[in-house]
Length: 296
Image 1: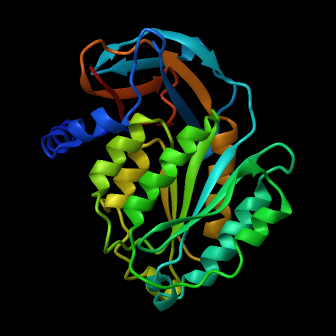
Image 2: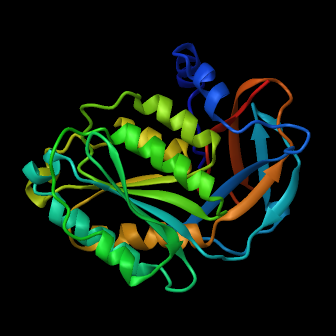
């Protein structure tokens, strides 16, 4: 199964001005930076596949095969940016306490002394509650005492946190969002954020947490902008309630990140947006970013 942006959506995004924004914000390929890297999660029956070789993969840029020139498959440390929605709707929707609990439990899934984490929260603006560093008890402290208040700039917060994660420079990295899925004050649209975050290769995993009673009427279903945002960056959207579904989501995220394959190839020479697709000879489900920008 292949995760990529539909062509029509890419054209719409570029027409909306994403190419101009990316020219200012996306990585520039120069004589010193010749390779595009892509983190790839390969799953079978929901579990990571860890024994593939370079020859098992095919990478296409704009549907043209690009030779893989670097390949890494060994499990490694994770760098996770935990992004907690602290806007007023989280209190109204009874999602604040479950979100804090889920974030602490995911932090406990990481390995002390090996994995790294940063803690962020947002309402209308983004706050850094703990800088990136080795997982330590201070991270748990940073997750405590959240006061839900204010409007929600979810898409803006995802973009800013993804940039901070990319600047940190770790290879097996992701932004993990704990939210009720609402946004009412972002300056960016979901489609813009998807393209810009895909360009810097930061998978975004979204845990849309809703109580059982609200789950039946939740608007976070297939086709929601958050689903396209997550899949277009190589991540995934989970709509969960406290309990088994949340446990499975956490385990899937951590195991996928730890088993990421890291591929690199020479970029297309033409400036602009280039779609990416990654597949395996075994046709396993694959999660990878939807494309990259080449800046003149």
